[in-house]
Length: 279
View 1 (cartoon, rainbow, N blue to C red):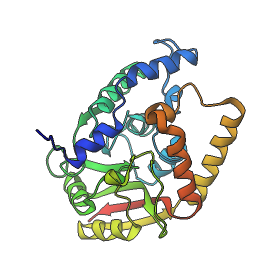
View 2 (view 1 turned 90 degrees about the vertical axis):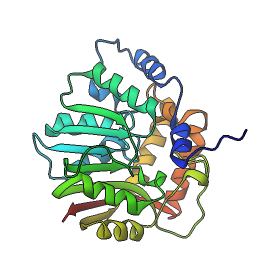
View 3 (view 1 turned 45 degrees about the vertical axis):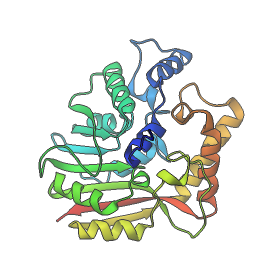
View 4 (view 1 turned 60 degrees about the vertical axis):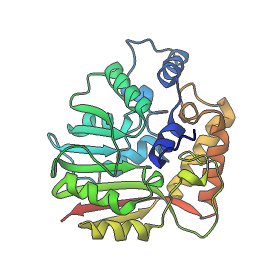
């Protein structure tokens, strides 16, 4: 009997590692950390799964108008790096959602490991079927997630439903900015079957139709090129770090990163920020 799967199930399976927590613990030991000496900053090499890492997170967060006591939804929270950053630096309560059960379990484990991180929780959920009632959150973030979401309209409608009026939605996604065919595999998809990279105009139309005003847009191609230049320079001197994104991406990590860099350099794609406000 043929077993069929949904796109979301295929995406979750692509991201799943199988022994991710153990691999991270092994990397921490190689860095000289025991289970009682781990700090949040020790994880920045792996828990910020997007171009630009920690700096990109900080840059986006600065534009979200966050403050103590605010509630934030982090869409596609991965292993929890962005959620922990927002909670620690801004005093927010953060709910992270992700399609991949293993990522949610590891996010919870890492949050306990580096604690205390008050007000951070994670659950398995879809960006197009968000948990909770209407107007639950003051703000939402989404970093390098939309590339796996085919229905941008439904995504934006769901986020608008989840946000209070005036709430900000901060997006940092890889978007199509040129007509070139993409080379696969890429960090978010092994093949085009689970890749839904779209032009900024697609996002703008979906956001505006869902009731958002776009406050700012920024193409971060040059930031990305410089980020990868620094990464390449460091790795040419000392090799991959004990704890890095290559652990998340598995055996094809080198190829995925090389394809991403090439696609950005030739102008096919670029990481784009969109800062939006719910009407």
